[in-house]
Image (cartoon, rainbow, N blue to C red; front, side, top):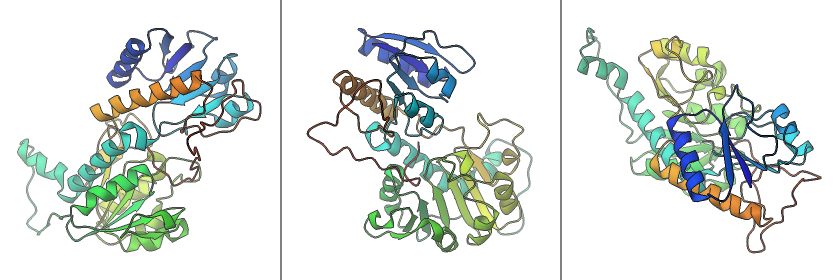
Length: 344
């Protein structure tokens, strides 16, 4: 097969490309990144890290599958792909190690914001600052309430980890009846109610149009005094000026963000000027576990595609697919298309 590998050529992506070439040496691989033209117009599969727009889809007459290397697929023009008869697949967090990796960083961000890590490290690194004479206690997770927005793969894995910290756990989801045992779940329209009762609000959902700026000024105002917001979903979920104002005013204790609206995050981003906001550069999923798991999953997808089988991560249903794919005989391949499923 002719397989294209599309996305920014960072070290993580290049290592994945290298290993795919080694593992599937019978296939013909080529790579390109945003701003470049595709090296061929005869690609059969595109493995993507980045946005795949309609013009790129239309230029590939033999393309049958766009397979994302992550759980998020909001960058793909799914409507254009479906109209062209092209399947679109995500890489579910529960099958790649992404969920475990992102859940760990969510805990890291909760702790970093709670312990004012930016401020404390400034003293370690010798930055000239004076400790305030006013008592400013760091917060412990023990006994606090964490509300996980999005009870999908990442949300459920995060809940497992937070139980060990002795936290009270709640969630917000389109399907609250699927919440893990011991987790009080709210529906989407009850977000403000859930946020008002939580010391931590953690976002683990995709950046769909429906979810854009779901954490706006009204939700932030509804949050508990001295609460912490953590985002490991997508930067589009949060009204960033409103978040900055909520932290600067002292209403929120702080925030931990692995994602921002404009990535890669620049030094001029005003979020970086606030020491109570701890920002990491969208690295939550970039681990050895996720690399190995994603390669394994992509291998399964390619094998299924060759055999005319529809993989578990397919998210669309072309009426006239260029390549016919059938459901496996031995599995239920139902797909959760909720807008409050796990991101990554």
